[in-house]
Length: 157
Image (cartoon, rainbow, N blue to C red; front, top):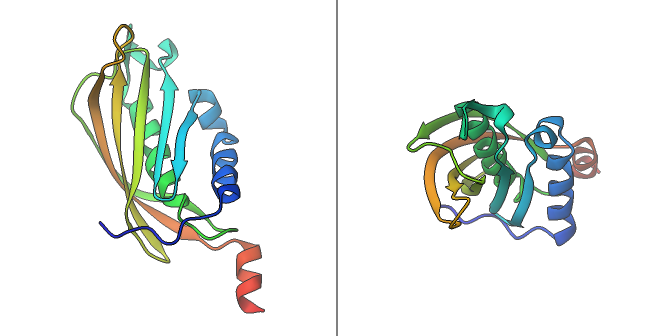
């Protein structure tokens, strides 16, 4: 694993969280940040019967969504101020049913570069009674890093 670039300022991590949580899909899913640091992000999503294919078991789309958000947010956590990113490729492997009180996704940077960042996330189903975590999916993704207008103007100056 390539170590992430220098740690961003706490204000950059707060901006990342605000940007992610402002997305309509993140709001719809009920995502919340548990932790955010350079190269690592942890998100939670409550169980929502509207996203289930049968009572108490989330459909794969919801599992994919939290995994994608966690991985790409981790990639975003190492970007310079003014930059953003977007998913360009993913693969998701489902390994167990997504059932419990919530899903917990831990995203991480695998390799950060200027143009592309390879990132990953593991998704855990959290048992309602015991809090025990069961791995239910793993995702590997590539995020395209996009220089913002402010960052581009500063680089040209």
